[in-house]
Image (tube, rainbow, N blue to C red; front, top):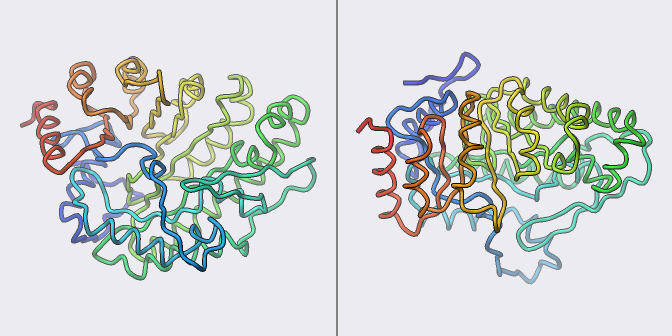
Length: 370
């Protein structure tokens, strides 16, 4: 069976909610290397499923949506209630990841944030390039994130895993400050300023990542975030959503160097390819050092179903990388017929436990090992 690399160490984790945790992790480690133990790993949830249902809870003391997002006790209690009613089959792990929205990282630079029911967004405020702001470890978002993480660590033992929050550096971080349209023009008009800011953010980004990694590791936690795929080393989800707006030349000049530094800092990297716009840069992304996998997000509407993207998935496999694939259950048989199982991790919606158990049997037959 596949074992952790020299930079990893098996952690002694026992979870009453996930008694097969060790075997599930062995399947994940095999997947990192495009290998199979008995079947491909499967997570029984859809990408971004956590953003599909808004909470209608409201406390008298909450004056605005931000108060609900910042309420540590409420968010932990809500997670624990969900934990009680769920069985974690396959490679679905019980993970609490503290979440203050996808722009938490930029918020700690003072960028204003607007909270909605299920997500939040930044309001760009950088009018001109000057001395780059630095990450503020005393910012209210950072202090609240530390509070969230510490509170979860105090009660997680034997029940669930605590992850680290969503972190976006690079041009996505600068887009949060500058806005997408202005940043597109900046690549032509102020390229040296853009690069100067990116030099600052990569230094800050690695410090912030290590801060949370060290906090979690000191409590015996693996490395995991919103994608719900753990590692015993340093797990990272590099991304560059802004890349959908730029040329291959600009990707090489402004995006790739920062991504390269991020990937080299980590043990395992799963690149979040958010749609066909980012996929234009796939060949270059596949050249990143220390990249184990791609998460393919095919968008919405006409971008479904998954079968139209089989050639892209096969291209990733041919490059020696693994793939996270989100699909409807009705497409599973056709997909298994078209794609080899090595290096595939499936994200599947399910109605009930019986359906999930049936899927596991089908996946075992796909490999021909059972």
